[in-house]
Every structure is written in structure tokens, then in C-alpha cells.
Image (cartoon, rainbow, N blue to C red):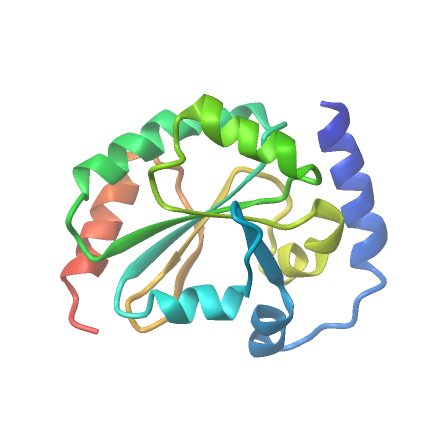
Length: 171
């Protein structure tokens, strides 16, 4: 709870200090780190997966609701295994070790792509997409366009139907 309050206060304070930027700039400027320490911009991550539907999950190790959603996310991945879809987990954890430990505890290391960026450094991106709480889900189409900035969580059957519909579409 304390982490969530700190996140909200940081978000509110920093949100007023950033000038509005365009989508391409926001995507290029936001650099995330994977579990091996490699860094990529959000735009590069999306470009690397063009031709696939991408479900983005904004989460953190300190977020109880985020962790409760992970079993549903794992089941959804299993149900859609072999399809043109990527599950992209973007953590806003400040501490690398807590993030990695949480991935291991939740047994999600083998599923999807995992990246992290400090919550203090990701405020502008979250503000741009109107993300005010986590977990938060976003869907990117095969051609790299945002089709749903505020998708329902994996526990909702509507998400699976929406993803299946997008997977079937020609890019």
C-alpha cells in the first residue's frame, strides 16, 4: 500500500512537469531493461514483434492485484500458444532484485517478454497513455497500432475473444 501511495504522489508531482510529446517520441525515449540487463526502447520492442498481436501488461512486484492476475495471464498464454501473439510484461519496479524475485515466485519467467523501468522514470509514458493505476493492459495490433489502451484483465473472457479476433486479422 505504501508503495502505491508513493507511486501516486510521484506520478502526480511529475505529471505536471512534463510537456506533452508525440507518440513516436514517447515510444523512442522510454528505454526498458530486460532480465539480462539489455536495454531497448519501447518502440524497438514493438518493432521487433511487428506482425504479432502484443498484449502489454503494466505491473509491479509490490502490486497485489497485479500478482493475482498472473495465473490468468499464464492460462491465456497457454490457450493462445502457437498463435501470433506476444505477452509483454512491463514492470515499474524500482528494484531489479525484487522484480526478478517476483518473476521467479510467480513462475512467469518462461512466458512472454519481461522488461523493467523505474516507476519514477516511467511517469511520462504512463501519463501519455492515461495509465493511473496498475495492473493495466494495452493491446497492439499486428501492424503496430494501439487498438485498446485500456483492455480488460486476463481473467475476463472478453480479452481472449478480442485477442483471437485480432490474431485472425491479416496485417
